[in-house]
Length: 447
Ligand SMILES: *Cc1c(COP(=O)(O)O)cnc(C)c1O
Image (cartoon, rainbow, N blue to C red; front, side):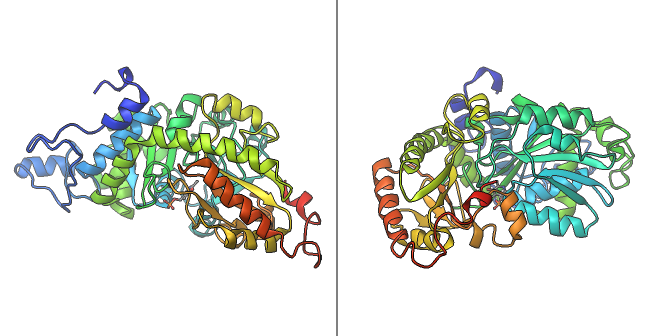
């Protein structure tokens, strides 16, 4: 399919999926097979040596997974994609493909909690050091990039602070250092914003969230623009003969597909976080309705964020679509059509105790550690998703004791507002008496 000719909604439904040749099945077939039969010995040898593209074994290539990969790559405007068992796996294989012992990653401090621990605990233990940047100015990143730095990492919309990355500025800073900008665009979704159009080189998704949309499955996707020039001094492994593939070289043999081929033929082979065909099917089906769902979610969010901001029990609402958010200008620049997503946080008056009472009072909102579902969700990050972080890391991630994260679904907005309203009232029941309440910590919590 010549993707460029079709609109976003058409590609969401059709990219990567043609009717099954053998049966004519219109839906994407679920190829639940660990391995695939070779035509003959020559064919088998050619596939193993990467001289011929084709299925071998589902840890590396699977036709259902390939359809999902093509669909997401098309929506992001990338050259191709590699799908993984989870968003964390997509991040891990990207990081370890680009950085090794003694190398550095420069990353925003405003990241998903699991990403912070992957970088700060596991990769650090493997000898890859991450420098977390507190500021939001690309110059703050440039200041800490050194010769050993192999990539710049940020979230398009930070979870849960709602801060918007200056992707164009970060791309300039990264490219000046001859390293790629990698963007986690889970919260933005390709419907709202496509980082590659703004200069990002690699885009990562937790497909568990908006791409699937139904909260039924885990998955991740790495999309490569295919346009980054791998500098031979910075990234020698892209140019050195690969012993495990008979001495071919990633750039020499695969040109603009070098990174994608390495992710698949080396990282999926060696690390093994393959997504199942059934999971890929669920996500590919979810993507078909992505434009409809996300538009509705953002419409609901706009109404709910404005309503919350006017409530006396609410200290601040952190959604960049609001004029009060410090990144409102960035939201207008990067999200001109619909708005900066449907996951945001707000600070409740009364701190941790009020936050817990609020969460426990919700009826329609579900209290779960997920986002991007068609059902509305709520959580208290300081005690859950970001509970493993130190006080300082929490502050840097923009999370206070009374911060509540909401993921707005596709329900009727008035019903969601009614549920939030009664929970806000209940949250304040014993407020004011015990000194743990409003004000004292909130100014410094909001960094
Ligand atoms: C959930 C999430 C991840 C991790 O993805 P999993 O699919 O849960 O492994 C990474 N980044 C962001 C922004 C997320 O919301």
